[in-house]
Image 1 (spheres, rainbow, N blue to C red):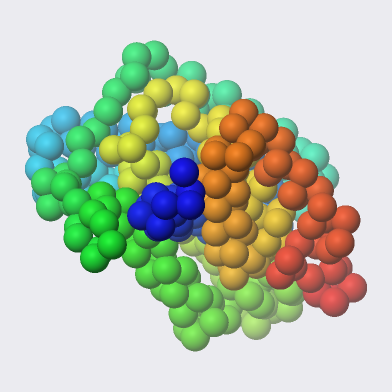
Image 2: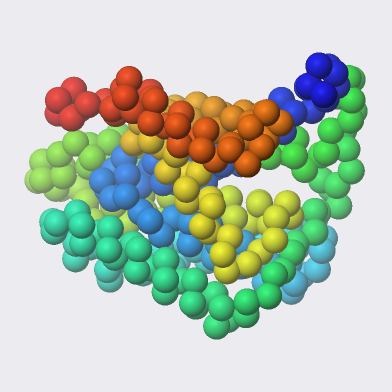
Length: 298
């Protein structure tokens, strides 16, 4: 089937679109770990909450272009507020504690948020329609391709560039990198490190929620939607290297292509192939493709 150039082209586009969709979510996980050094198990739950918040906004304003984009913005802002409260009242108590306590906290947040979603929205599946402006298909010459999938494909590089520019070319980015390397020295220079940590956690969580809102037109919104995406995100950041933005970008592309093309050749074994690829890369480079060993980092 893939010998057909049109089918091959469509599957390549699907792989790129899937990879970029996953990157938006995984980038938040990478950002949080890169600065706070916290492996956030609740990242998938933030993705789920974002999808539900977007659903609520769309139900309020209708299945219109305005309703959809307000839903995406509302998901990010709403999750940003929740993340700020979590960081201020929970995470700040654990920064200097055993990392295992941080893992237990974020895992507990998964349970809490999942039950909260069931209490507010119920256990039924919901859906969001594709906005009218992004419905239909675009003529790419060789064939037509869904407009919404093309939108997701283009959005990924835009988010990647925005994050890269913010981290590498702005004062805020320099402060965030300094907070990762030496929190005590940065604090001694008069920078409010607690505020930096809160900002990074909020931005990373907002990316997860926005990813959930953007995924809602393509998948069902239900209380279990966080389970698979958090696995995919961890595979991406481990492959690319914990804390590496370019690593997450490349890792998302790798997983996107493996998922789409693996479904043709490996079928139900595709998830096994994802784990096998992750293990293989870790054997060659224990810190990931673009990560750095502890000795180099320090």
